Image 1 (spheres, rainbow, N blue to C red):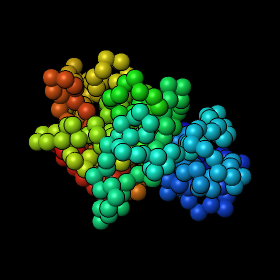
Image 2: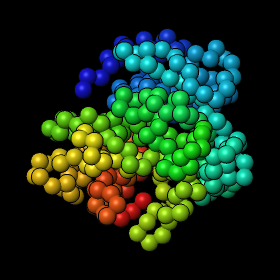
Image 3: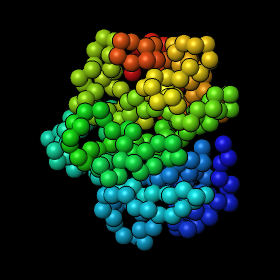
Image 4: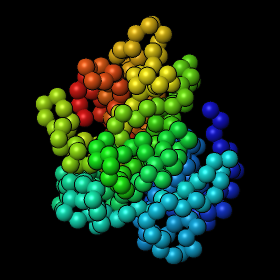
Length: 287
């Protein structure tokens, strides 16, 4: 779990021309967290008109640009498709729906409509946005034949997930990653599951800072038996939740929701992790 030394991060910031910026588009100070608190982030996100590293003051079109290599890993600038590209609930053929507070103030900035979207294609779905996660892992689970798809993704979520993997390893559970059962959800997709015992109308998944995850190093489509008792149940999910709790204790800037879910007839146990900016906890129900 070796993280990049400060000198490596500063060197990358210098190479990308970030030294004079106060914060990058995702709210991180460039010298402290180009690669995040975890040291494992591999992309920054910006709108076309925002001053971004490597752009020489020019506006760039939406897409993915390779910027540099830091500690042996590629680093990307992802230029977002502006929210204004969504017309009548869709971008091109991709249906998205309408955000809960779209066109009006929510009174809570964490529920503001996204500023833009990452266009995910068949070709770029495998691009790493952090050491353990790729763009394709966060797409909404519908419209399988429609490309490009569009995703909202918060770097704080990626950082929190990477740190949770690291914390599990520190706790004696040498997992190699986390399976993303559900990442970003378009409002249209989320709305279909809203109701008693289902999804919340204001689910954080619509805002790109939430994911339902579990470790699955065995590739069985089921949470690994973390406590080694021969069963996969809530006890294993609680170990994952505990790791996320430890991350928040060490990094309060990543505070958010942690919800533990039991197995059902269609899925095994999992844990919801988000970085909404305030603490939220629940057991067998929630967002």
